[in-house]
Image (cartoon, rainbow, N blue to C red; front, top):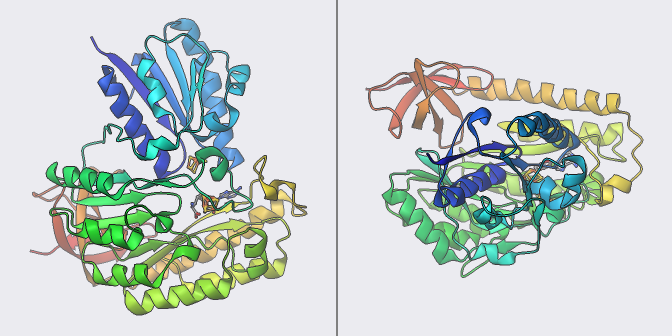
Length: 430
Ligand code: SAH
Ligand code: SF4
Ligand code: F3S
């Protein structure tokens, strides 16, 4: 009987996709994936250190593995992802029951997992990952993630990512084109290009050039990308978002704060005014574009006035959705040593105000879609109700519809009949 691997993924899409790559590598080693930790011969934690909470979640899970390992000493435990990269062999101090620590640039260290001895660390700098084509074990679906670049050069003052993912490194355009063509042959209809800062992609062509290339892959009907950095949102990219039929009308463009002085101390390299100009350009050229963003509440030095500027920015822009978090100091980053006078309660209060305002905006925006006709790509059964199917609009909104005969992978026209807080209910048009 083949060996089984259980992968527990924390963090961003990049990690989710890295888990698909690890599953691909391990499949070549004879491992099948399992959903049951009891059944597993190998457990991998793919970790995230973006905020303290994410770290704590992982450490408590890892702690629980001690008992498992006692019962089943041959069980292997690997720690991957951003905490692994940061902590290296220190992981073994907290968790002597772990066997292997591997960073995001060293996924192939899994290749010898069955043979190697314990306490192995693979966290070396390995920019050649950008030219390696790793096997990927995707969950069967209609939508696939494709990495286009690794790392980040931006060093936003609060952020751990440049320390865990290394410097920016773009994959060759040809390799991406080949992977996307292969996905089209396998029946995928939508791809999401991944990178910390996709619009600074630079290889044989730049990012708009890459979108032009991928637009010509037959069978791929929708192209999405995350994340874009406002500083690199060029007129050429806006033009292609409006001109290329495959590129979806959605952009995730993290604002972080509506105060230019806070943006400066975050080292974001744009002001609120330049961000706003880009938003206007986007809306002028891509009229139905939906916009989502990330916001940090209670950055060091954020005054009540700065916070009000963020709320004001949200009212002005009316994002379709946001991810908002309290500032969490990350060891080794510049912001961690900035004077932080806000109490946790004050940060929580600001976060609450941000989330509450966004709820109002999202609800209003969703309601305005009632009665409109939109096209959705059906992704499968709804997570919450088996009698419903769920799909996404080109603007990345989730729509549920009563079960249909065509099912997963169908591109269908629906009328929006009811707006809910986090999703829309639709009815299929004949
Ligand atoms: N590369 C992307 C986002 C990466 S991290 C970008 O540049 O936008 C995702 C989000 O986590 C960030 O946009 C930010 O809002 C949030 N984040 C990152 N570090 C954080 C910290 N120390 N505390 C709170 N939120 C943080
Ligand atoms: Fe972090 Fe900034 Fe890089 Fe995004 S651009 S990953 S927020 S350093
Ligand atoms: Fe977390 Fe690393 Fe992604 S810190 S958000 S898993 S890049």
